[in-house]
Length: 467
View 1 (cartoon, helix red, strand yellow):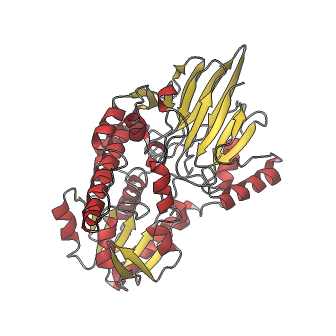
View 2 (cartoon, rainbow, N blue to C red):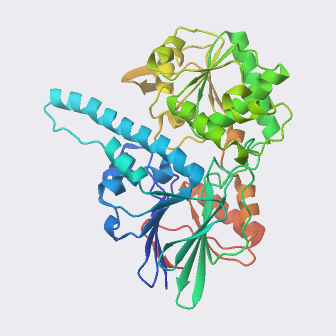
C-alpha cells in the first residue's frame, strides 16, 4: 500500500512537510515548510532532511507562506531538480517570498559572523542563498484550480481553492494502488469564511484520508462585524491619545485584508488618522501580484471602488503611503502621532516592525494591534502574553503601549468552520489533525467526536501510516 510519513507541522503550527510513497515507487513531497519561532526551530531548519532529496519525483505546494515553502531552497541546494507544482498565483508569490527569505538569511549570517569574528568563533553559513532560491524558482510548474495533473507515476494532483490567501489550495492527491485509486486530501490552510477578498474554501466530498489543519482548532473567531467595530474604536482612541498605531502584518494575505478594511472605514468616514503607511517592500510587491489576479477576488462590498479602482489594492485607500526604500521607512519614525503603520514581519521576528517598536513600544499613547496568530517563541507572542520588557534590536524595551489582539482577522478557519468543511465528505475518512499546537488539536479532536461522532488522530513526528 501507499505510505504517508508525517515530517512537519506535527503538534505545532509551522514546518509543514509530508512524504507520500506509492507501491510503484513514486515519491512525492507535500510541502517543504520552514519552522518558525524558537531557536531550536531554526536548528531544525538546518538539520538534515528525513529523506533523500534526490529520490523525490515531485514536490507539491499548497500555498506560498514560508511555513509551507521556506525550505524549498535548501532542497534545491541539496540537489533536487524535479518539478514543484503549485497554483499559478502561488508560483508568483513564491518568487517574492523565497527571494526575500534568502536575502534575510544572507544578511542575518553576515551580521552574526561579524560578532563571531570578534569573539573568535567560527563563521556560519546562511540557511540558504539567493542563488539557491533562484534555482528553486526554475523548478516551478503552475497549475490552474481544478486541473488534474500527473506529478509522478500513478500520482495525480488537483488543486481546489482554499480561500486562505491568493493562490492557496486544498490539495487532492489520487494515488494508483494497483487496480485501486486511493484519495488523500490535504486541507492546506483553510480560509476564514469572513475573509473580505477570498472565496470560501471549496467543499470536497470524497477522500480515503484527510489531513486537516487545526491552527484555531480550540475556538471560533469573533463575528467579523464585532472585530471591525473594535478596530474602529481602537483607531478612534489612538487618535484621542495622540499616538501612532502599529500593526505587525503578514505581507501576503493579512496586509491586503487590512487595506481593504481601512479603505471601507475611509469611505464611511470612520478613519480619523490622516496617513496610513505600508512599510513593507514585500507587501508592496505582493499588492502588485494581488492586483494582477484581481479576478480571483470575491468582492461584493459596495464601498469598494468600481472599475479600474477595484483592481489596484492601493486605490482602495487614498491616504495609503507606500515606503519601499529604507530612507522613507526611517522618516516615519519622526512622526509621533496620527499615523497607522503596517509593517512586517507578522510575528515580529524581524523586518521593519521591530524598528517601529524601538521608537513606539515604550510610549503610553501608542497602540499596538495584532491582527493574527502569534506562534510560541516569537517576539509577538511574548508581547501578547504580557511581557513587561522585550528585547528589540539588542536593546531591552519597556512595553507601555496599549496592546490589542484581533482574532477575528485571522485568515484561518475557526473550529466550527473546520468541522463544517470536513463534514462534507460522504463517508468518514481516516482523519489526521496537523498544523496546530497540541492543545488546539486536542480540542478539535474532542469537538469532532462530540459533534460528528468522528474519530480523529493526532500523529507523532515521523509517524508513518498506510493510505
